[in-house]
Length: 373
Image 1 (cartoon, helix red, strand yellow):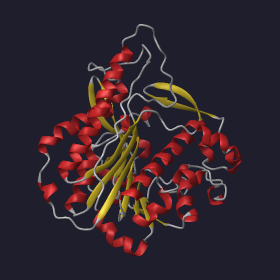
Image 2 (cartoon, rainbow, N blue to C red):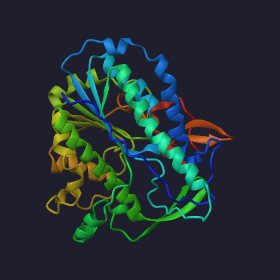
Image 3 (cartoon, rainbow, N blue to C red):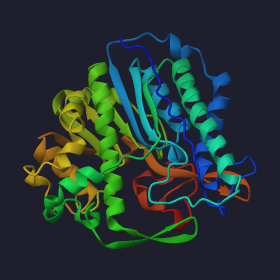
Image 4 (cartoon, rainbow, N blue to C red):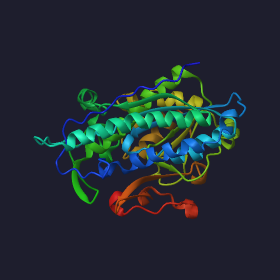
């Protein structure tokens, strides 16, 4: 059995804009989610029931994979509605995390201002929060009876430049053509009451970065153990109620290898790509080469896939011949959410655009203003 370990990469921001808006504690306003979740983890430690760590174990095991950005990472609901119920059902729970750390902002250039002390303040706060996040996350998992097998905060975002430059021949194949990573078209996006014009390629490359992170984590998973299930839950996933993995365990006997997703917001007939539950065999087939598959010219089933949802469906069912089994959203109860700073207080909200209407009254957080969707 592997010993638990954490790779901590402390972030240093050497330059920031003088106009960066900071909270009283020195954190940028857009770090509201990270700050709120760290506070929740810190406050939960004295209240964690010891009974979770004393539960009897079976040979049932699940790996939880988390990639994305630290500033978007929602932890509390994952502990409450995923980790704790799994442990209560007797599952061995191993967690694998790779996040872009606070202060690493893809698509933005921090402008140096001579003599400005904001950079030093942000650098100090981001370093402290990076260190504290992983430490608290590991403690919260271990006190419940789970373990953090791999935790990594990236010092820099994934660099796709070389791979994309070497694969220009793929540009005409139409893979995720709506926002192709090779595209020169512009998209207008709104964020924090500001309008940005971004290349469509930025969106497509963000999808590829997620693929790369998941492939990286899957290599660690494969070297660690064989798992009955691999759960891929997004950094911004808010779990609305408990995951009942035992109900899937009975179903997977007939469906394996299989991928379970939410039967909502499937966009043009694809699969919902927010949260995935893989059987163990399916995870090895798909996640082990997830990033490389995009650049494999022989996978013609991926050509002319307009969006990520269609791309995923073709990858699952046509390239790797794995069964896709969309489920009622109540079985995989996640919503995309974030913490907002309103009048100096933090408030959790759900992104309306990605909220499955099938949840009805199950949602316990208000909808975000449209600008955040």
